[in-house]
Image (cartoon, rainbow, N blue to C red; front, top):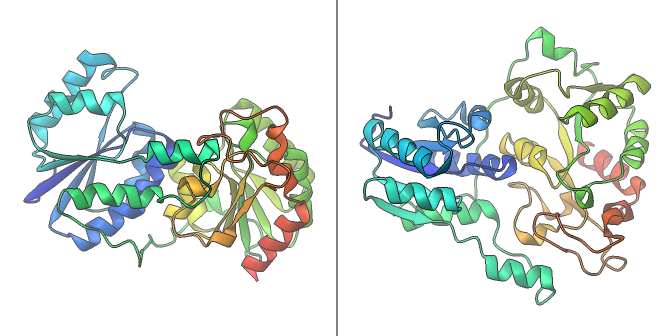
Length: 340
């Protein structure tokens, strides 16, 4: 239980990338308001994200089990009301679950994220094409509404983790720089073709390459790539999330899609190159604290309707290959330029 004079309940249940983007915001908050505690309500799988934030307590929402449905949320609210004395609620999720939960919590000050739904709709419909507010800034706005403005301009990040021997093997030759590559995303329209990504991997033999992914199919593909190259190791299905965080903290660069792995690397302070297919950084979901030129976008002269959706789940026929309009030579050159 949090013991500070003030305690703010932060609600963010999913998804991986969105939860990861709360971390640098909470790091800034806890640095700038050291006398205020934070209780983060999220799913158990994401708890390791907050492991080094000393003022932060994680409460697990079991939304598929104990806390499923309206009665489950009522039970969760009773636990929060009884065990955690929250001064205010920062709802940085704003979904039906968080709305219902807030009804059951004892009346407190609360603020809810403005997701900018109208302007995002204009972005994907072609009414406008410009940079929208970044998601971490939208999170910070919630705290500002509660009376705690946050300065995100000079972020700090956790120290590099000292790896145990069982993890060191994934980094290979210690004289080489190490690159993480996460070639998958939730939707096909957000992905760079795996066979073309393998061309990139083959061309980067001067570096150690660590592959990230999950799920039976992804694990099989990544293991096959690992077998073909001496400088490549796959961690997919072989380590826990905490161990993945340890490994990522020791990388020099992460190359990822518009996906959770990009946001995890960014929250740890890595340089992150991202590949964008049918989505676009203008929607506000670019990894935290990364330069604009680290975001490699599909050719809009060939795919003028980009972004076709905010999450990459819908796109016209033929747009599923949009990311392939970024030549592998561009990726290879950019990786080498960033690491040089």
